[in-house]
Every structure is written in structure tokens, then in C-alpha cells.
Length: 216
Ligand SMILES: Nc1ncnc2c1ncn2[C@@H]1O[C@H](COP(=O)(O)OP(=O)(O)OP(=O)(O)O)[C@@H](O)[C@H]1O
Ligand SMILES: Cc1cn([C@H]2C[C@H](O)[C@@H](COP(=O)(O)O)O2)c(=O)[nH]c1=O
Image 1 (cartoon, protein in one colour):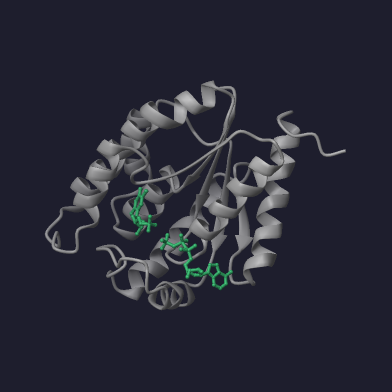
Image 2 (image 1 turned 90 degrees about the horizontal axis):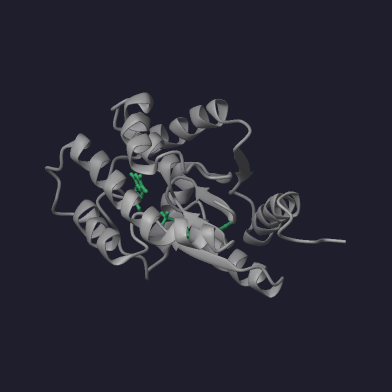
């Protein structure tokens, strides 16, 4: 991989989509070649898998089926879109990746972080992100934000009880301890502009380190 692979993570309504859109725009203005994408989805096969996973009628979905479907969508998206872009030297900004599976399926669903990591190792073959911005938010605030967003479709995971979303956050906090060099916490309860300035600063720092951006 020769570009830079950056993932954005967090509980529901943390502001990842808002951030990724602005980051992609501003980095492009800085002359950086950027690919902004998302999981599950981002390409045809993975978007179809997304529809199956998030369908509100699929209440009977087994947790292991859910974990395997996320990993399958991840594999296809990675090989078809992310890795080719990285080989072209692009900066890839991805809304969710492996840490979502570890926090949601591994910890909140109770499958085990190590078990879910193992199936994802098979799926990604070592293609871990170079850096991960974790947008930390109290789930009660995040869920209120998405409830106010009339344009956003409510999916099967959104409908989980609030206790599940608290476990998701706890899962992310465990991942912060496990991957302290890769995952950077950003307080997402602050106003949009302030959250954005922090995220941009972290990303600029990584781009300068990687020799992709020159900020003299
Ligand atoms: N810092 C913020 N303060 C207040 N509202 C915000 C903030 N960031 C985003 N929002 C609003 O909260 C809602 C959810 O934001 P967004 O869609 O970016 O979150 P998300 O992390 O992508 O959510 P999800 O993963 O659940 O789809 C949107 O209506 C957005 O305008
Ligand atoms: C990649 C991934 C996602 N999820 C969950 C997280 C969200 O509830 C949905 C995706 O919806 P969003 O609006 O795009 O955030 O899926 C998950 O549980 N495990 C995963 O690996």
C-alpha cells in the first residue's frame, strides 16, 4: 500500500458522515487525491450485502451471520475499491471499517473481540488502517441527533435498545486501549466546527508524516 488508509469510527450519530464529506472536500482543495467511501457498502456487491444486513425486517438474523456478512462486504469493498486506490497513492477516508465489527459484533453482541478479529483477519489479510479517528459520543446524544435528521433512514441496528449502543461505546473504549498508536479519540459532543478542526489537524499531521502534504 502506498497511499494512506484512514478510517472514521464511532457510535450512531457521532458525526462521521458530516466529517468525511468536509474532510474530502478540504483535502482535495489542498491538492490531495482523496477517495471517500463507506462500510458496509461503497461498491455494488457490498451495498447489496448492506441492504440485507440493515433490513429492519431481518430481526431473526443470527449474530454470527451478521458478523460474517459485515466481513464479506468488507472483503469485497477492500479488494475492489480501497486497495486499488491506495496503490494509486490516494488517501482513502473510510466511514467505518474493522473496528465497527469489533465494537458492535465483538463486544456489544457478545461474540468476543478476538473471535470477530479472527474472521476479519481472514477478510482483510493485514490491510489495517494507518490511522483511525474515533468520534466519541454519549449514545443518548447520538441517537437524538439521528432522530432529528429526517432524511436519514432508520436501520435495524439503530433500533437496538439504548443499552446495546452503550455497549458499542464501551467496546470502542476497549479498542482504544488495545490499539493506542492507531486510534485517536476526538470528543464528538463539541460543535461541528470544533470537532472538524481537531479531525483535520490529526489528518494533516499524518499526511505530513507520510510525505503526502507539505504544510510549511
Ligand atoms: N458536532 C455535532 N453537533 C451537533 N450535531 C451534529 C454534529 N455532528 C453531526 N451532527 C448532526 O448529527 C446528525 C448525525 O450526523 P452524521 O450523519 O454525520 O453521523 P454519523 O456518525 O455518520 O451517523 P451514523 O453512523 O449513525 O449514520 C446529522 O443531522 C448531523 O448534522
Ligand atoms: C461496518 C459495520 C457497521 N456496523 C453497523 C453500524 C451501523 O449501525 C450500521 C451502518 O450504518 P451507518 O449509518 O453507515 O453507520 O452498521 C456494524 O455493526 N458492524 C460493522 O462492521
